[in-house]
Image (cartoon, rainbow, N blue to C red; front, side, top):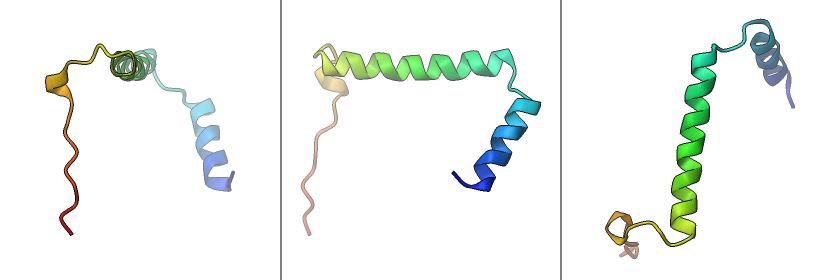
Length: 57
């Protein structure tokens, strides 16, 4: 860990994010986890899955 990250942590401790921002970030992480779980367990619809294209080069 370098000094820049330590300074960033110090700033977060002195000026923490608002409760609304924390809720927003947690909601985004939860949505991503739900999408991942749906795809992992086979509940993701086929029309929403991308097709791999082989590199022509």
